[in-house]
Figure 1: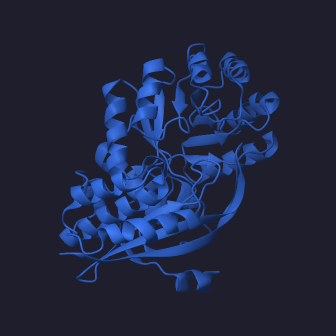
Figure 2 (figure 1 turned 180 degrees about the vertical axis):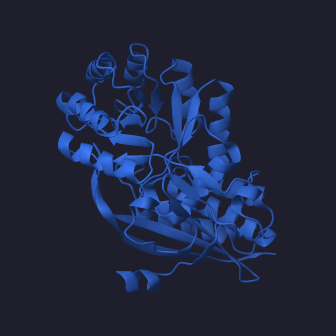
Amino acid sequence: MTIAAVRTHRLSAPLHTPFVTALRSTTTVETLIVEVVDSDGRSGFGEAPQVWQVTGASIGGAESCVRELLAPLLTGRDADDLQARCAQVRGAVVGNESAKAAVDVALHDLAARRLGVPLVRLLGGTALRVPTDVTLAAGDAVDLAAAAGRRRAEGFTVLKLKVGTDASGDLDRVRSVRAAVGPDVRIRLDANQGWTPREAVRVIRGIVDAGLDVELVEQPVHRRDLDGLAWVSDRVEVPILADESVFDVRDLVEVIRRRAADMVNVKLAKCGGLQAARTLLDLAAAHGMGTIVGSMMEGPIGVGAAASLVAASGTTAVSDLDAAWWLAWSPVTGGIRYEGATVLLPNAPGLGIADVSEAKVQRHG
């Protein structure tokens, strides 16, 4: 059975709450959906989120890569030869990891649909429930405490607190959130590269000395400052999680070689898709590193693929799969749902997406 067409859909959907980090602030998800159609009319879907400050990928750039290079490469090829198709995508272009991830996921989704099984089954797992943390957008101590209380009441037991916008006030922010949620909720921090190495050590040691019980600290320093990342890791007890510092295998090898971090956050749009992500997870595990799978600010397709990977491969800590939870409404029909702090995977072929179209977005837009 051959691939008959590769289509793209530009989607924009509002968030119910502004998403603020040390890198950016947004009130919408801006993303490109890739649809791979076989000669029987079945479709598989993938997603390339636009996050300029992390991947540098734009919707226009991803769409151009898919339409001008990847679509002609795949059209007319055997849709069932999944490994060969994904290898073609990986080798076709330098960079453009978000575009490659979208096509990679769409090919996996189509393969699972053709077999009549959920994507998680194609990946070797059976679980349809995956726990997630939830992010607290950067803000002042009072607002963060109020948001933390709401998230706890909604059933979330792992909170990811965005810091790094103001190192001098970050200790007070963590103290305020801890007071609001009590001792039974896990708190992790994400500085999104916002601290210098010295600021990171000072803040983290202050948190430890205050007994605030932080689970981990994600990407405390600039992604290219691996010496600084290693310097921080060597001087604090709290596990350090590398995110923006690791896009591909070479990045992870260098982090491992320098002993720069204790854990790694694997994201499909950073590394190029499901196959590349599994390689990173296996490499990290082989070297005793902790793992989570994360998401960009993306929709149910991207998060559904990431959650399916977690359900099949596992991680050492609760993963970061709340991105689609921030949407005011879903731009697709079908797919994942949230039940408190759990991502529910559909017991349906592939990602369970029934419809995605510009028309649907226009009706909601």
